[in-house]
Length: 40
Image (cartoon, rainbow, N blue to C red; front, side):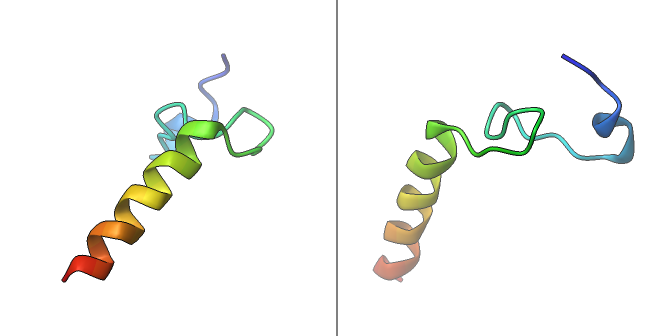
């Protein structure tokens, strides 16, 4: 994995591929946080 983008402070934590395609984990977390926001 290239660390070029990380030098600018971006750390996707495995949520997006090097090409910017969102991984399954992105959608899982997105749904979780949308549910949490709806609860408040």
